[in-house]
Image (cartoon, rainbow, N blue to C red; front, side, top):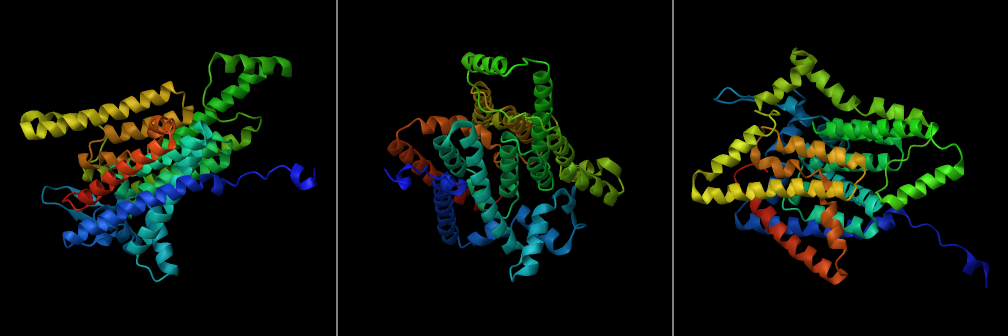
Length: 412
């Protein structure tokens, strides 16, 4: 036997490990874009305009071009200010436009495409760490074929935010605390729901500090600690939690860094508007956005039952909300790591309990990717041929729905 035969195989690179998930994701997104191009052409519309120059994407590109201060006053007295849009995506659009010949809208599309791939990789990394490679691939595919998946290709901030959130959560799960804090801070500069990432980092760090303290007063010998770990494993397996370790400084830095992005922008808006720390809430109120515990959404659903055709839509909304809540409960029962449960819970609560435009709620839930892990596990349990058939069928339906959705009258 030669040395070559006895030499251990090199470890698999992270990119190679994620390649099946990324290739599958790219194929699903290409199918969605093809369906959008064909549908838009049949309606004499530009698919590229729908992706880059309507609704929120217009607001982002205006911030990139003109800065903050632009607002629209509606006849009913509402004031739509571009201060409602967090700055990281416009900064990236402006930076790319400055060093290339692209317009801010074009740059936003480029950012979205690259960020969506980074987000898919992050979703894979988290799911792979928690449930294994096959489940990781399935999680990415399920995230790609969501009915609102076309938003992942728009010049919106969802893909950028999901990428930052997923990699921050992965950093937490693998004990890279400073990285987790920096990414959480950047997520806080991307969307208001960046608070969910901050909450996940904080809870994970505080729990890790608590485990360190408990370990310091627990079994003193390695044999006793090993027995305790074995007993815990026998009592019931649990998905990997963040490692505690004996280095409190990185965790303390993560606690300090994580909220800086969101706090800096909110405080700047308050200073810019002259309304103090709560100025950003006034900006959101001008858009009729707020947190009312779900009252406005419940009333909206209830009004659907005043006539028969709309009652079907109301029933569908109830089923959809029930499915989201059921998936969260299943994630709890499957013992997802605490940071994922905290992150998903905050994203879901902010999406369902906000008094914002109700048609956008499916899009607002897009970053809550751990909700899809139970579905990914179920898909991973099927034979490969059957799982491929299921994904292809749903991907086709999702592509058609996305094309129909973006060609509608209202924003996604």
